[in-house]
Structure formats: structure tokens, C-alpha cells
View (tube, rainbow, N blue to C red):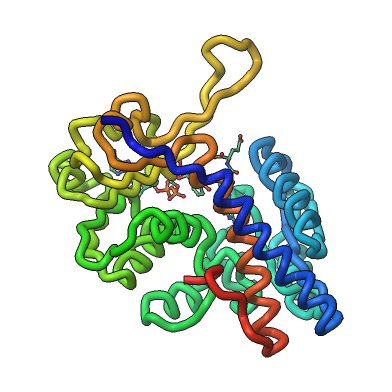
Length: 299
Ligand SMILES: NC(=O)C1=CN([C@@H]2O[C@H](COP(=O)(O)OP(=O)(O)OC[C@H]3O[C@@H](n4cnc5c(N)ncnc54)[C@H](OP(=O)(O)O)[C@@H]3O)[C@@H](O)[C@H]2O)C=CC1
Ligand SMILES: Nc1nc(=O)c2c([nH]1)NC[C@@H]1CN(c3ccc(C(=O)N[C@@H](CCC(=O)O)C(=O)O)cc3)C=[N+]21
């Protein structure tokens, strides 16, 4: 048997379509255009590509996009001055600082400077705490995207065994909280987990977010399980000199023979991340205005 391939690219397009409809309504009913500010420090080529994609998609759904590129040696004080200005700007509803930032800057301090109401990455202590308490906040984009894919795939998540490999603040922890909210029995695995393969084999829902190419093998996967591959490793392309290729954390060729459903890399979780960034910006804008939030775009 071979697994159903979950088309994250197509699903992300429908999410962006919903966002665009709501943006149009906000404009016509309230004269408001939601705005997203993206801050990029330095010249990391991968980050440049992501930031360009975010800008393009933000404009496509009818939102305002504000890009701020700062030199790699920018001082913390200058970066904070920009964030303060964006926090105070009524045309900016969402703020994202692309990570990684250069070593002399502290990511936690950067996140802490962003107004939690505009923290569309959901990384602030306030938003992490709201999620853990089951209250309404802004949820990190990649786990939110995975949740949307899972809700679409699985009729009843309640009572299922879910295993998340990875415990980062950006992904693993919020993903586990969301699965818990769906009444899954959740295990968070990490680099110190004993017999990871056996832990994974229990999972009805297996989510891998490590960053080790193709580490999840077919005999780690329960037959019929839903497998979500978050990991992204960029390697030199085997056939095309100079080009690169993306690999996930899951050995797709083998695991897709065992799983019930699986996300590919690319074209799975990745496109959902940017779609959810736009969804979060719209949500933040609706909350700032005190108008009804769109349905189906939040946790
Ligand atoms: N598709 C998308 O939109 C996105 C993709 N990503 C990708 O997801 C991956 C994870 O990202 P992120 O969470 O930020 O990464 P981190 O490096 O912050 O976290 C990686 C996690 O994997 C765990 N880990 C490392 N080695 C092993 C191992 N051998 N066995 C089990 N667990 C292990 C670590 O455990 P420990 O805590 O013990 O060190 C850690 O919790 C990356 O490849 C990243 O590129 C990330 C964000 C968005
Ligand atoms: N503050 C912050 N928030 C983030 O959410 C954040 C970040 N920093 N730094 C880097 C990671 C990574 N990330 C991705 C976004 C889109 C794709 C994506 O669109 N991937 C496509 C393909 C992209 C390609 O071909 O290069 C796919 O998987 O199909 C992947 C990864 C967001 N991140």
C-alpha cells in the first residue's frame, strides 16, 4: 500500500485565498489594510529567499508589506529602535524578525521587544504562555500550518497517539500543545530520547522536526500513520552542479510505503508556514480593530 500524499502547496493556496477574501472585506467595510513588517538582519542567502517569498505572498493577498533590511553589524539598540517604531505604527499589524540573526544579537531579547499582539511568529513568552494555558494568542506559523493539515486529513484526532520529534520553542513545543488541545496523547521526543524508533512506532500521528535528513525510516512508522515532515536540509543537487535540493527528516521513498498519509518536502509543510504567517497577520489586525476574526484560520 502506498500513502496518500498531503499536498501542502495546494492547501496553502486555499488558505491564502481565504485570507485574501477577508482582507478585501476589511478594506471595503473598515477601510483598513492589514500590514506585515519583516525585519532581516544581515545577508543570509536562505533568509533572503524566504523573505522575498513572504513579501510576494503578502502583496498577493492584498496586504501591505514593509521590508526592513539591516546590516549584519547593526547594534541591538538600532534594531530595538526599529522594533519600537513598528510596535507603535498603526499600519503594522504583524512583525516578524527573520531568524537566525547574527551572533551578537540575542534572539530571545529580539522576540521580547516585539509587542505580543503583533508577534505573528507566536514566539513571545506571552503567546507561548497563552497557548500552554489554552487561551487565545498568536500561534507559531509552522505548527499552526501542521494543525490545519492534520485537521483536514483526520476526522477525529481525539485519543490518538501523537509523537513530535523536536522540542524547540519555534516548533516542537507549540506543536505538542496544539496536539494536546486536540486531545491526542502526546509524546515529545528529542536528542536524549531512548529508543526513538520504538517511541515513533507507537504514533498514529508522527511529526518530525529535527533537521537530520531522512532519519525517520520505514520501520519507525506504524502502518497507516499520518506522517508530517517539518525538517528541511539543503544539500547540493546530485545531478545539477551549482543547484541545491531539499530533504526532509523522513525517508520519503520508504516511509510512503508504510504510512497512511505523508507530507512531501518540498511542497508539504513549508508552503503552509508562509500562508499561516499571513493568516496570523490578518488575525492580529482583526483583534486590533475589534472586528470578528475569520474562522478556520486560527488554532
Ligand atoms: N517547513 C518549515 O516551514 C520549517 C522548517 N523548519 C525545519 O525544521 C527542523 C527543526 O527546526 P527547529 O525546531 O527550529 O530546530 P532546532 O535545531 O531548534 O531543534 C531540533 C530538535 O531536534 C532534536 N534532535 C536533534 N538531534 C536529534 C536526534 N538525533 N534524535 C532526536 N531528536 C533530535 C533536538 O533535541 P535537543 O533539544 O535534545 O537538542 C531539538 O529539540 C529544521 O530542519 C528546520 O529547518 C523549521 C521551521 C519552519
Ligand atoms: N522568525 C522566523 N520565523 C520562521 O517561521 C522562520 C524563520 N524565522 N527562519 C527560518 C525558518 C524556516 N521557514 C520556512 C518557511 C517557508 C518554507 C517554504 O516555503 N518551503 C518550501 C520550499 C522552499 C524552497 O524551495 O526553498 C517547501 O518546503 O515546499 C520553508 C521554511 C520559516 N522559518
